[in-house]
Length: 251
Image 1: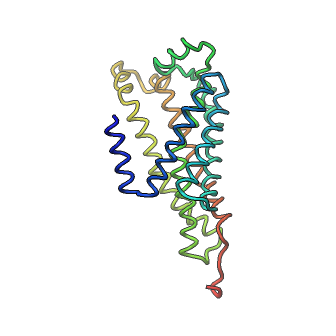
Image 2: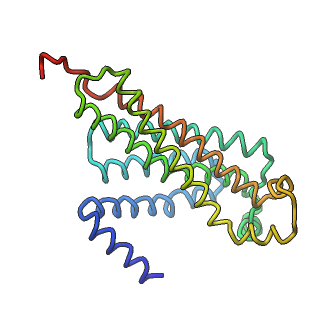
């Protein structure tokens, strides 16, 4: 494990160099927030939704500015990311309650309730939904913001409306590829579980009704919806904050 971790750091530094180092520092800070704030807060019974939003916001502020620098472009991506996080949190809260998921998805959940009987695992699962959406939201929002800025540089005469439409064409392609990433990532994580459940020969409806598969389905759908909605929001914010069109006579 440590050898693999060392190889990961080495590859990142060799390929991404200074930017890779900044990304690793941001990742280290995210680990500190997760281990030093979010986990202790959840274990002491703090509201999972609030913990997820506060911790995720702190992580994104530091990670985005550390990795991509202080600029209006990065701030636009941050605003889109935070909007996506709020939408993901609301969707997660509603879907967890309406789908009646309990949070008891594996043996670890049962072990937690043994040591902390008052722990609300449904609340913890809502927090997990918010944290799960961090990576893809960061990827999509910074790409959309950068795309808008690059489009403005390449075509300074574009109106804000045409700039938004051009940015959204890029965003739609990114949405398609990122949704595949989310689904395949969760499918790979739950592959062994899917194999075990398939041995029982249950129909799809019964599989989705199980706590284990239900959690993964909700996690995938909530993350995907938050991701899709973050694209137009971030694009609109970037278009609004990017310099206006330059008349042809002034170029």
